[in-house]
Image (tube, rainbow, N blue to C red; front, side, top):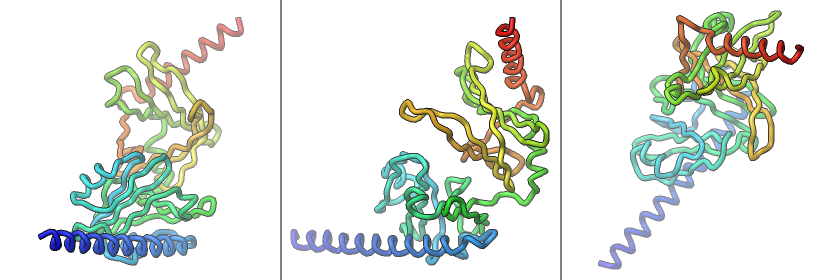
Amino acid sequence: MKKIKLLLVIACLILSVGCTSQQNKNEKELIKRIKGLENEKEVMLNNITPFEWELVYSFDPYTSKKEVKETIGFEANVSETVNEGMPHLVFVKDKEVVCEIIGYPSNLGINIKTNSSVIHAKDNIKFKVEKLNNIVCLTEKTTDITEDKVWSAIENKEWSNYDDGSIGIGYGIYFLKEKDTKYAVIMGYGSGLAVIGAYKSEVELKDNLIRFDFPTKNGGEEGMKRMELIYKNEDLYLGDKKLEYDSENPAFHYNEWLKYTESKNTNETE
């Protein structure tokens, strides 16, 4: 009996090593193919993967191995992200991980950005291709509308995480144009003041992606962080999180911030 159990364990180990080896092979080949796409405008993920898959899962930073396995629904040899800015994609077919992409884009030479936590191969999702700082980026394409229509949909509106407002804190982003330049005003809400701080940043709009920088602190050191929003299905998203705006008062916090800054400037000059 012990001998049979030992043989089963050895067989499982051999299968595990074989699966891992194939995953690594698929990963290297997929990265190689993506790096060769820098002159393409858009692609379908199905057409560039050198292996068959049914689902691809996208995981946030610090998702544990246990959570990854619970999400995909079976035991597998998977990794976990240990820091921000590391894409983590798991390709699955027939309850088997056929490829896993994880790591810093600067190390991989590629970046794959999805807007959903899971994508079905049968959906034939298109990805836009662009090369940024020697990194070939694939960004899930979710709309064919023009940039002017995207801006018209978000301009002069305050997009917020209203579902977090019950505890008196949150954030909002107000979009406006001044002298043909597009801006985002990033505001932090407080329970005592309508707005506890704001930062104005120039907006880069490409297709349905809205990008801008804002100041942040990491380990006590100040720096700038890039925020990327996506407009799809007539809504604005930060990752999987849909932002909302109040149609009856679409600039409430922004107007309150203007009043506060004007009052502050007046007091300082007196």
